[in-house]
Length: 418
Image (cartoon, rainbow, N blue to C red):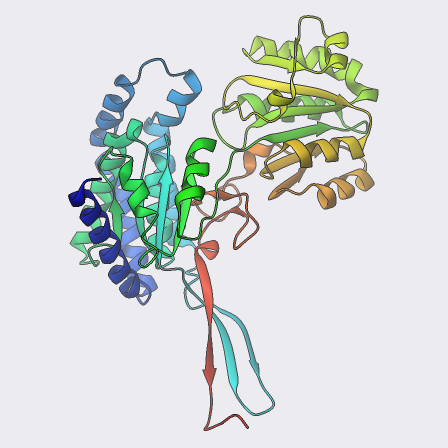
């Protein structure tokens, strides 16, 4: 291990800790002004960012369309980054919010107040918009951030980071508030994950191998943005036209993201009416279908799905299909094979919808809607730092409020404990 790399990581973490203490008391007005200028700077430097992105893409070889799509920026996606930061500026500042206030019988006045978490390290792959989103969210919530993106998007991430860093410097924001590790050396992650004296939280966003590695090595608490094995269940009471639209959108609209449908479940009573037309539409869109034995009987030429298929996050135009006997079987399948990310039921039966939402153990559970809405911006929360599939301390889209913790402020008038 290179000594200088270790020293560099420690220096970054120490500076981030110092910065976090100053960011925690930074006025909301200043944060919002900086965020608005960040958005303007991204637009102004769009050509520089797109040039860096093109260099990253040209360096790729042998990667699938979905992988390249996750990495690619264009005018529209840069505008989305800009809009996300502007939305963050418009949102209420969670820091200092009163969660609860009360008084004890002896006259002590207690307040439970939102405060920043501190130093957050985010390790992610592919999607360069994450760089801007995480910087905006952490800054608004009073946290310093250490970013380590994938080597495949290094030039793009650096271009975005340098644009935003320049804005912060113009406003005299403390050095160390935002940090991006520019080395491709994977040992940097190993070092970072041991720096629990300085870093309060780690969030890995990426493939299963990355997340398992972070969890195994980290001495710091980890909130996992785990894989998205998302399901849509077409119930026996479903409006089949609605189901067709929802399933197509959930799979095809952007297959390379974590909230895309990877597995479609269909009740046996509607399978013969629903599957032929649905799979024909999927085939026309280039989707490879792998189905159970009943699916194969209904639609000829479907490849047989294995248990591994039902546990796979394809992130591509590949779909596993299963015909189920009833709602209970669908729920059991989702809870067993899913990743507790986002799952949906299409049904006109309120009792079935209620049972599904109560029994499916996922961060986001939908009725008659596409799983593609699991997103901080779509939820009206601004951007998100990730989708937590954990249960502590946050679950689902992690936006401003989820990037805070709390403390108790206790006001007395001379009370002593007897």
